[in-house]
Length: 199
Image 1 (cartoon, rainbow, N blue to C red):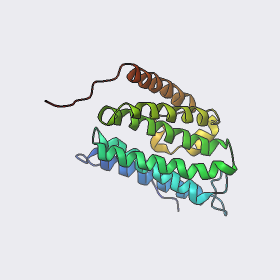
Image 2: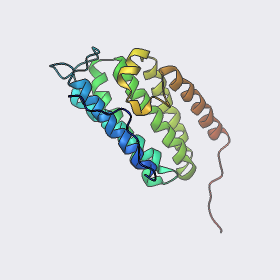
Image 3: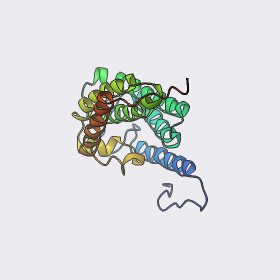
Image 4: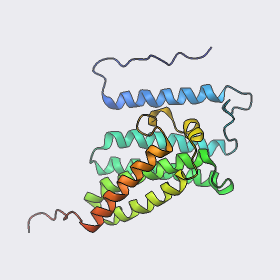
């Protein structure tokens, strides 16, 4: 019998981070339901097969990084932990895409991970130096290349529900990539003076 996961409400007073964790668990349950739809364990919508462990690791890293980032604010340790998760997602998908160049499902996920990594580099650059801004631009170049291979169908299939509100389509992510690229270029051109403290 399929678990009843729709219509769940969060009790009053529950902290935002636990609301996020609830959403993460619901995403996992939805993936289990999709995987059980066929005998082979693949989703019933004829998505890609192969490299299943890498795809699972990539999704887990993406979700862990996302919720850590949501909680991080300006905490450099949490930002670093989230960035490490996004890098792990990228590395897992590198393995998938080495033998399946341009596969739209993996490209969708990796493009999103590159973008989120760039957002952290932008946030960390204020504390760690403007070289993070240049690295963020490099991540955005990679994100743009990956999202160029994404299709709306692959996006709908590959991107966890947790991201659908903020990133409903490849086009919406492309718009955010362009905006962040302008911000990073502006920060490199007009850097914020570092706080060196009193002499």
